[in-house]
Amino acid sequence: MNPAGMFERTIRPYLLVLTLVFAASFLAGTMAPPAVSRQMAEVFQVVVGNYRGLAGGMLFFNILVQNVMATIFVILSGAIVGIIPTFAVSSNGFGLGVLYRQASEASGYSKAALKILPYGVLEIPALLIAASYGLWLGVMAVRRMRGKESTLLRFHIEHSFRRYFAIVFPLLVIAAGIETALILALP
Image (spheres, rainbow, N blue to C red):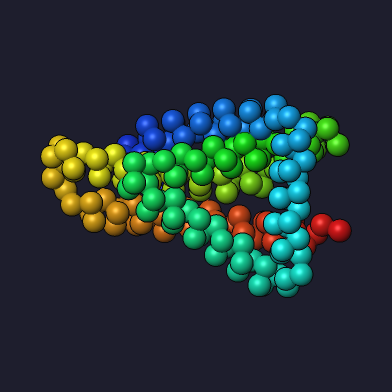
């Protein structure tokens, strides 16, 4: 895998914008009122609780399928003006910010950073790259409708999915493995 290819010229500006959206949303999440923090913690516990009864292989498969379906949806929905990819990035940033704040209040900033690190290293970059391709597809669709792009949208979608399976999918496989290990290690 060519690391430079992850940030190919096609999506670079979208990746930058979505990274800024994620960062701003993360900061907003760290400043969320206590009521919002409690609701997010409850939602997170429900999600983790859904996985607790699953054996290792089934847990891994469920996490992977959920993340793959979400990122594919983010790419395809981008053709509809990019609203959903932007929302997906901002809601993930906000939620992670809320969880980081709660973890830092309970165990300090450095331990909280270690708790969210597995998501930030693999899942968030995978989401950002998928959402960037989604936004890029949205721009290409608009350009095509305005007559400023002659390439069929199908070719852009094919390009996005080639990059998806070369970059995003491997990140999601590794992330699902790490997340499975973390969930199984929780008491």
